[in-house]
Length: 462
Ligand SMILES: [Cu+2]
Image 1 (cartoon, helix red, strand yellow):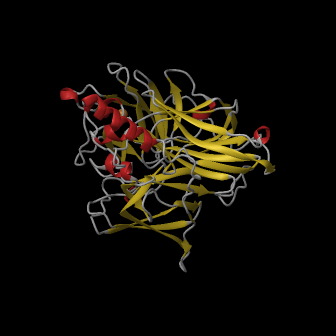
Image 2: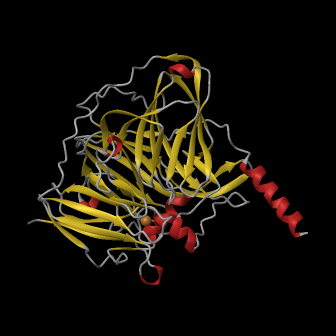
Image 3: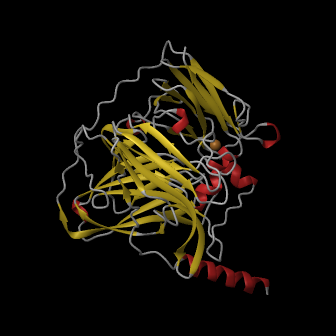
């Protein structure tokens, strides 16, 4: 009886999980804001509950911004003053953090900028950083992982009107956001978010991969060059992305903006929070299919998306030779070095940075405005299967070295999040240029973050 029952359950889950692929890739609406008479570009986000049918016939309770799942893509222009109003229509508190943005601490949307249930909050800052793909998501102490899991996340595109980069930039035509999120579905279609201790330690595995909230969606491409803005928006699984059919990625940007030029890649590895912009040259793939495949660090494999180039493709440029000039970061010699040890082996199984779990009343590190430092981040070797994803708020850093070696070209540009495998040590260059205040640093594996793997640094006037 038991085996018949479990057999039925298996068949039901299999039927459920095979039901949806083939829908078109959902493109989140592009919100370009509205210019006020005062010259401020205004945006409005409303976090609310909803439901979405990820599988036909199964309503999944979700959270979303201005919709039932995920949120609009916000396009911000460098040099402009922006004001983003966030309304919280949830029955619980939230925050909205602008991941990767260089801005004043009070606009960061971290755990200090709590928006009570039914409340609202306005983030005001001037966009002052190179073109890049950033994103936004909740960042409340202890409930970040659950709120992101339910669907609260969206992409941000920073555009620099003063520079015309020779890459596709028609949103939804040849330039696409690709938000990748591993999820675990219950048989009734609801998300199953109940991580146990092994999930918290090693990564919360799923049984589906959502791409812009769809399962194995299809992207019909009709241009020779395709630009994908890849984001690992999942909670705690590292994704290794590949393309079938022998086609390469040309990575053009990392977290904080363009690389010096395209880098041909067989695979792109993204830890939670990281972004990579890639170009695909579809000229040899007219009328064929290209599958974007994803494998997690826990060994699960998914087809993230099926790209179908049309039989006839419109020429929209060629691979650029050069993109950005990125200053040589040097070796960090002469700068003070600050150690950060990420550990899953704290007393009582705690997840710690420098032996401490997060405490909002404690400032862990104090740095001086106008200075540069090397942050040396390392992970313990004890838990051999647990990677970490180190993220710093408020700025973009440079990777000086990974285990003593220079970073590969795709990690040599501007970064705000860096993957560390067990036993890794990375040296980062941080510059505290123009804002004082309290910012966070933490592991972006969200179950680790919620378990306390986070700290605060304060930038102070010298
Ligand atoms: Cu971690």
